[in-house]
Image 1: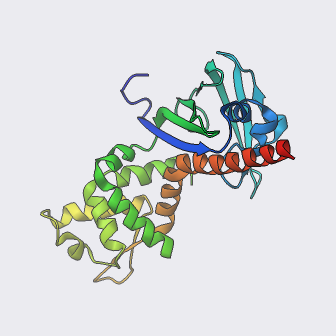
Image 2 (image 1 turned 135 degrees about the vertical axis):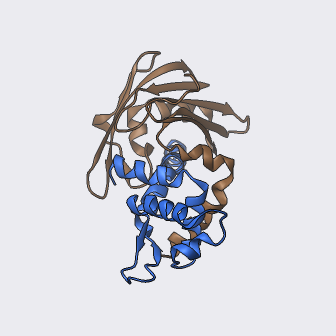
Image 3 (image 1 turned 90 degrees about the horizontal axis):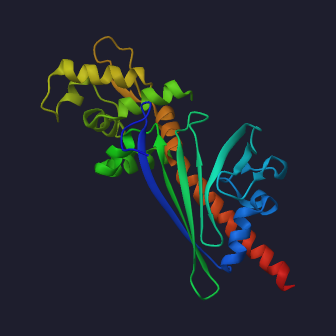
Length: 154
Length: 111
């Protein structure tokens, strides 16, 4: 991906890391078996029905699912493709622009911490419409936080 | 909130003076001249910023002919902030549930 903006979108990178108390092989399975993905994929308030999940675990293979809002049944079909499958260390999946989202990819790294725990790091690299994120990094987080606090009181 | 509305909110927010105006209005309503005080810019310039904020639905103006104070309209901002939080919400939510799921299957295996 190049650095330039794409269709009014800006490139953005973000990493989310979490340590799980489970051996790496188990965590890998949770990420790659539809029967397990259905138990956890998606933010709170969103379900991902098993019958909508397709995992073709090889580079170029499909990674698809439809997330459904618990509140009102709104469906969020998500069409992705695996780019790298290195069991049990790394998964890379990517998507084209869809549903108003920009193209992007996520690299998931599974690190065996050697004590029965596994660190999972999910690195997002893609285009988003939130052109103000660059601004946010330049330091208006404080303002945003203040506004956020104020909004929370409302 | 439609993509077009979201766009207008974000482009309204993509300016330091307009963000400062919103932060000021978070403390209470103010007239355009009151809003202009901390800035080294003309009243018409502030007026223009306020119009952009109004069009984005972030600010509304009172009806009194003389004062017409500006007020923050929180809902579009709340939605835009919610949209921004979406990405971390996705992973926070997913990772919480993955953690619960891994605990559950290990309990089953152990049992």
